[in-house]
Length: 133
Length: 114
Image 1: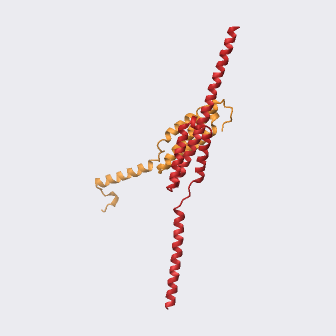
Image 2 (image 1 turned 180 degrees about the horizontal axis):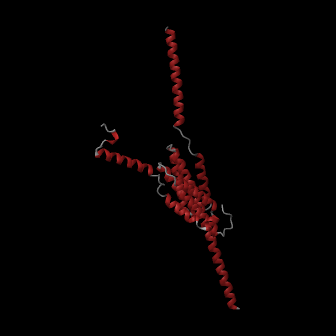
Image 3 (image 1 turned 120 degrees about the vertical axis):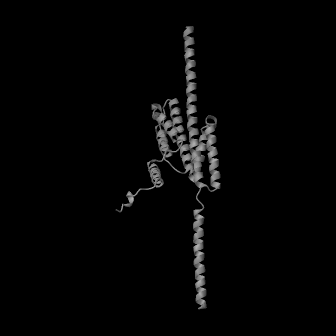
């Protein structure tokens, strides 16, 4: 009788411990969402490309905005607010892409202006030579 | 003679309450979910670019992406953070399309659109 009671008590303790462990494991998995690594890397790559394209000179505000979103995304990861981190990382990437697009547009416009000035100078020179003859 | 219950006169208060409740229910059914604030401005900006033939030639792919982003931003949603995120993304994608189009136009459009 006594042996049966002890065995039954041990079995209950064993079952309880197993259930507790399983619950703890599940809770641990559920409360630790993964950081948005891919989005963060994409944002960093886009910012690096923007810096390489001289966006600091031509689209400084947009580049600053991208960096600010990335910093906020990193903070959100540290605070384990992963959904927010994902959104901020995407915003950082799109802001960096805008910085690149505006930099390219500004460079193209600059080249256009220089070509225009060159053509004007050529016209003036030709006119001057024509007047001399 | 016994009158059916629905023919018996009812009090004014009760009738008023029933009419009011019916009106509220009907209004609730008739109201459709509205697009988030700011999405109308996005649509207007995008339409303006789409109506520009130069933009359609030089930033076709970016305008298509912006269209998809605006459509997403126009969807009604209760989560304000997600709504603000979608509005931001759509706005920047429209601006990317505009900058790409302007850049390619200034560069003579020698590079292929997209």
